[in-house]
Length: 157
Image 1 (cartoon, rainbow, N blue to C red):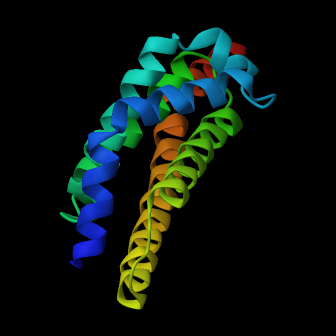
Image 2: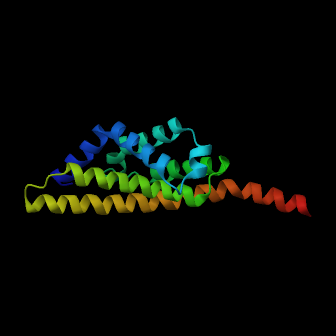
């Protein structure tokens, strides 16, 4: 892992509270998150996002895919039980990624061309992380919805 990547991850983890607060503000003001705002307590969202930013290094550098999968299956399932549409769940993950990219753009000062490679490596890892997060959240959502669909179909027979 490059030194630049390590520094960026450390900076994100150190400032995770600030990032979580910034994301909460974006969710509160997005026209695409009405059900999210109504059905997910702000502190719950802030805590989940803080946890993601706080442990980002473990997921990016340690490549802890199993933990990432479990975490997002759980998030997707929870949002389904809170009756948040899957489109809003995905939108909040996209906002989480955008919030992080805005932060990296503002905070990273590239001093040498080699540092640019570190930042590109970081952005590629982040892209993979958030793609997987979206996928596993959607799977968790579908799994949580399945018993509801099954009970509806059997009750109609």
